Amino acid sequence: MMHDHQEASKRSFAAVAVAFELSLGAAGAAVAWGLNLPLVAAIWPVPALSVAVVWGVSATLPMIPVLVGMLFCQWRPIAWLRRLVTRFVRQGFGRASLWQLALVSVAAGLGEEILFRGALQPIAVAATSPVVGVVIVSLLFGLVHAASWSYFWLASLVGAYFGVLAYWRGEILSAAIAHALYDFIALTCIAKGYGVRHRPLFTIRSRSSAER
Image (cartoon, rainbow, N blue to C red; front, side, top):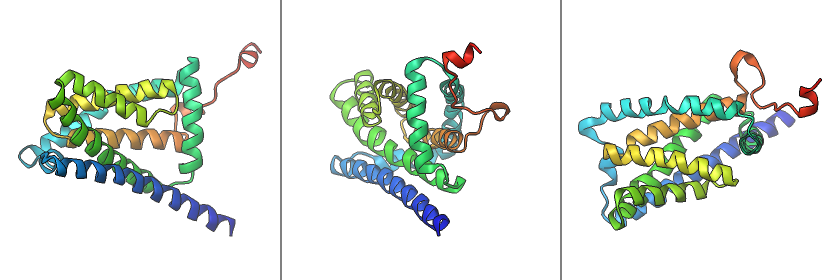
């Protein structure tokens, strides 16, 4: 009975996460439709679809060392952020299956990129300049993820990375793929505790234990 309740809670949390992320995409699509932005072409760049996929996968690779560094970094703001994120992810997704984590990641990559890079960034760029527009939307992206100041700045940098990729490529599929892949890798590492040499990723030794 307890197992059934846990399974139901797991599915419910994943479903809520997917619905929330897709609602962001729906909001972005509504804004794009209202302003006649070419969202469909940005999401599905048919003439260069395979190139967009390659760029999306390739853009994920530089983020992996950053993720590994974040998982092992002992600097206090990062360590505190890691504890915060770990607690949230393991409570919500600790018992989730890989396909559920993949579904949440795809929804996040698609929904958030439609809103931020597909709708808001073109508006901001048109109203200001490419650099200022990307910065503004990246800060908004960080604000939405602002569980702490360190998380705000980290998310803003990630948003800028996706923003530059989307602006340079002229489509958002590459950014959505990179976003989804990174989220899946990060969620899997944190929720399942996968790590180098099977050591716990998130145990931070105290000074007293280090001196023993």
